[in-house]
Amino acid sequence: MTTSRPGIVWYRDDLRVSDHPALHAASNAHASVVCIYVLDDRAPGLRPPGGAARWWLAQSLRALQGSLRKRGASLVLRKGSAPDVLAALARETDAESVYWNEIAQSPHEAVANEVAAALGEIGVAAQRFPGDLLAAPSQIRSKENRGLRVFTPFWRRVQALGDPPKPLPAPKRLNGIPDIASDTLEDWNLEPTKPDWAGGLRETWQPGEASAQARLEAFLAGAIAGYTGDRDRPDRDGTSGLSPHLRFGEISPRQVWHAARFAAAEHPRLSADIDKFLSELGWREFCRHLLFDVPDLATRNLQPSFDDFPWKYDDTALQAWQRGRTGYPIVDAGMRELWHTGVMHNRVRMVVASFLVKHLLIDWRRGEQWFWDTLVDADAGSNPANWQWVAGSGADAAPYFRVFNPILQGEKFDPDGAYVRRWVPELSQLLDKLIHQPWTATPIELASAGVELGKTYPQPIIDHKVGRERALAAYATIRGN
Image (tube, rainbow, N blue to C red; front, side, top):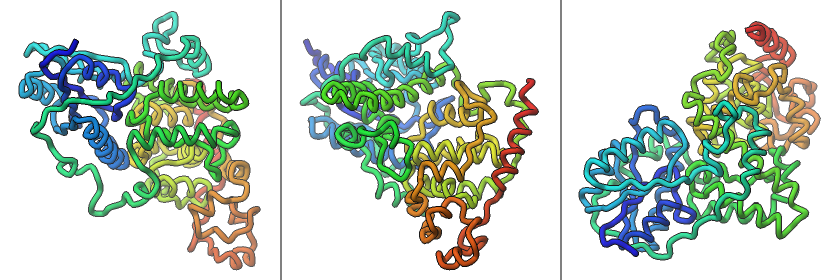
């Protein structure tokens, strides 16, 4: 039975209409529905999105506006304090209830609690639903009621829960309320203009729910075959490309889960590749659960011994890394891919992070901040958790003595140099055997490839052996702490 008073759906990091528990419940309970996105970038503890993520947010909101419009509703945009904005909208529309999907992060929960309190003061009900995880953090706890810090037992526990609920269908029709005051996306200045550095992002991505669904379908029909090996090859199109869509909730984890399980049932030969793919979804889940327990994951070493690590504050080296001018082709290719597309291949992310933290001894937090600003898929859990994993300061961390060799990593995972040639075109004419270590080429080989080290392409800013030994010495200073 529906009520004549409207319901409000508060959109957050869930910019979709299918498998949206809050929208589903509101559309079933109310004759009319008002959908709103609140840009609340001043709430205490909430981390404002970086530049690339702001660009994606604008495109995703446009796509959501179009999807809602097709169903008869609109998306109201307002900027300000979420409790104030939502209470004001409830009064304007005489709403009975406000619906939203929870975000299992302390700052978001604090804002949601303030919203619920503000609504309660004016007699409006708050309706909350789980929406961003496969399993709630409360379901995966140790005997001491703490979150797990090692991935493998964590993922076993999640899998032991069985399949998550099946995704909910998108409402076919929504009855909106016309003429509600709304900001425009242009009012919010989410997209860069002077200068407009987003050309590569527009060239690479089509944000929105429809694109997310199409990408998942294409991946499960194609690149999933061989995923276990190809996922480590930056020279191949072997990954799903779903990370920014998941980041903004254009697709839900359980939609991905059920689609993958259906594909495995239809094609048993793909089971191993699909299990590996789902474990990557599990890693996202692991990082989110970790963030639930450690809200300051982006600023605090999970292992306190790293508080005494002898980091170097070398802005020249940091800038060379940021600009893809380190002299190590696989590192430079990754950093240039990041700047152009807003993403970087996952294997290369590990290599460039290891290079910054271990070869250059630059604090992982400076790398994490750069990624936060330049990644379209910058996730509050995965980004700092992955940086701490590489540094050795986090959960389930890589051993301190593991220092990625950028030469060997390039030769192993980009054996023909196709990835480097794409993103470091000044080296494109070098022989395969030289592409990952151009400084070993003879003068004749360099000249024939049009490469002049130190001019057209930099010399390595640090020798690999020297960097590795220096890193191990630095780590030895904290091992006894």
